[in-house]
Length: 259
Image (cartoon, rainbow, N blue to C red; front, side, top):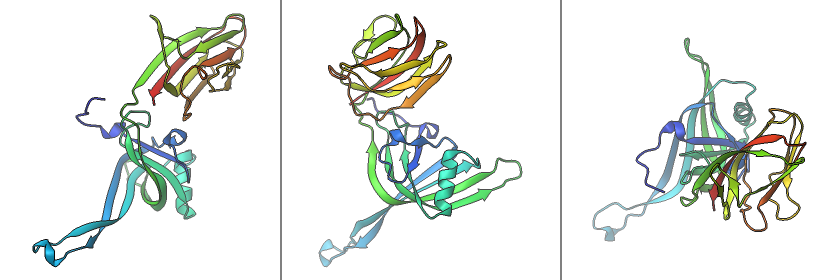
């Protein structure tokens, strides 16, 4: 991955989930925020000795993590309600504070459970009402980082059933001028739009199946998800089976990430 000159704040990612969450892929993106400020500090101990040539010596002790952000006041929004409830009940929520989106190679930041210590409402006359939030780390899970070598590939294509069935082989993904061999990678994000009027069932094939199993209803119904599965595409995990009616079609977008 080439060295980045800079990362825009608008491209960073803040994610929220229930306390105990350990994977940003299963958490909700907090897109209802403005500026986000992450403060990482450590306490200090004086370890000065006579042998330090007249210089004071300092060693870091306990680390602290604090996140401050503004949310538009939006009752009913699941993330807004989770943060508000954590404040009102003195409980915690899981947060992942990443410098890029969670599916970008090299994205990194603290992941853990946070106590909400400030949830103040700001009612400026000519602005949207906002909540000023301060969250402090209560349980550290990890410094989450997406491996730099995890290159991502994205494909969009249309599949047509033949006599109500089709098998999508992930080692031969169609992309217009040929096929792409996804061996060794996994699906990180998927969107499937059903173009037909009848239901479309997606399931792992009975032999060598890759499981993203779901059921899509009638015309224009869409399935979209971020997947946290660790299954890699290979000889025994490679085929997605589609079952529907006649020659109905569906539009697919797959994002693959290396592991």
